[in-house]
Picture 1 (cartoon, rainbow, N blue to C red):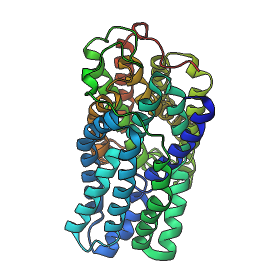
Picture 2: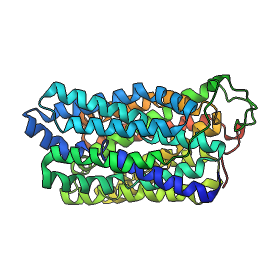
Picture 3: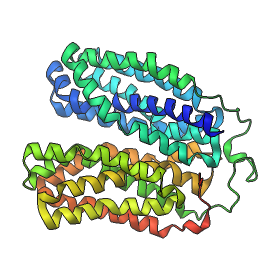
Length: 396
């Protein structure tokens, strides 16, 4: 696919991903308390339902990836837009804990087939080994999901209540997300399962398969780094306050993470794309532990440095979740393989807020040694892998 055709596609998919993330992953941060108050439920019940949604997305991910391998991203992502709308509309009508759980279960099914992994798989299905730049482009656009999603959710909730906010997001999926996903080019249907395709098929990588432990190591890296990312998203202000920062200062420092993520992705799109994706992933995995050391040595004054390092590293690692499976295994069967490798990540993501919250209650800011250790373990796993076994997915 030529550059002139690639970037309109990236813009459409990136916008649809911004909508998908802003209306699901970032929704409870602003609506959990109003939902709990409106339903007369403890707020923990809202977070339990959200955890169920994340677990459902882990279960569905491999099946969605396999469907994209066979039929392309267009029909899967179009169906997901409808499922997002149905789940959010159902959420706007819940009356108790049972209907709340069922609504979030629907949203979780949509998340399993409609977030980054599905978009990456759709691109790889269309572009094969040349999808690296497009994957980066999508994450650049969707990196503003919280920047757009939180203010819009707050506005809708202030004007129409939390039920109206959910209905508003549902309508956006039908009016904006569905047409955007419908505009994705059709992929040629496969007449054999991806596993049955010959290694010399068009788009297959011209090298021997990587060692068997490669998939396990990548799965661990993605799970460890996603645990850290989700834990920080949920608890960074609390950690800053626990280490001596004021609440206003903690909020200001936390606001640096989003721009740092986008900056990291721009670095990946520019200088780092000349390197093997494994090398940029190693540098990104080191960023969070370095931030932890700065924080522990210098205290709250190093909070901005921590936020910038963590955000930039997390931004690049989001891209690595799409590019490393591609560069090691190639495009054939990419969707199903990536869906399977991301199952541990989804489970880690589901339990990260609870588990890391317990660590903060016990050790305060000392809990950062745990997240820093996880980051170092991910770096060690990446160092175990060898870039020389494969060629970069794309250099342009």
